[in-house]
Image (cartoon, rainbow, N blue to C red):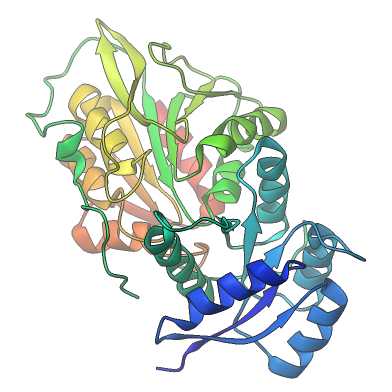
Length: 357
């Protein structure tokens, strides 16, 4: 297979060097060039025709968001943003994802001694995933493990499916990763204010989950929150897992409530979709609806199957509309998806399933 050809765009010579050396260390990736600003990048894109672009936000002469917007209108290509993990950086990065960026990684720190392998694996994995992503025009490989890959057993033990209990409430559990922030928005903006309560696990850093929930609250008819421990899950309300904790669904009598756990990362993620889905399978059973959207890897595939086995209808996003058909594709292969739908049909189907007796 041909190497993934990468162009790095960053005004910092040190960052360009770190990214270049990190990516070139992988035998399947080749950095074909680097540019210090968008004007130089524009010429190098024409000359080098890279597969993937890594893009900084704050650069001289033209900021990264302006350049990204122009790029996605005129020459759509996979872009991985290099972002600071701050509240300001979160808002900018979420805007970049709206403009069509595939994913983001944090800015490399000067002192990477203790975290370099983790950072390198994340960067390489995201660049490789971006190379195969479905990139839209703007209109409106295996990596060695350095940490144990826990299953959901590390946070919540697998148990018997619940007996049917007396409640008329339905609850929707949704998981996503790469491309998920925009996919989730496409679902939420199509829900009415009396939609079933929804719990969401999106792979996202701690600094980003709060701003993401605020953005979703501002563009949808449902009320969207960053989940807090003990919150009751109510119709017309959506609860997004904090980037630092697993989100679980628990039962308090006939009520559903949110529970947060700082247990170990599952499938190398916290929050993990498998953890959320298992808790929903155990505590809501056939009263739940499971939805797995675009994302890299396989987190959520086993959990979606557990939900289906507990009697819940389950939906996976189709390959054509997924940015990366990793997680939903794994669920389909495992038999966890009762239906496979294009993204713009998901909200409508949720409402149909919720109203069915």
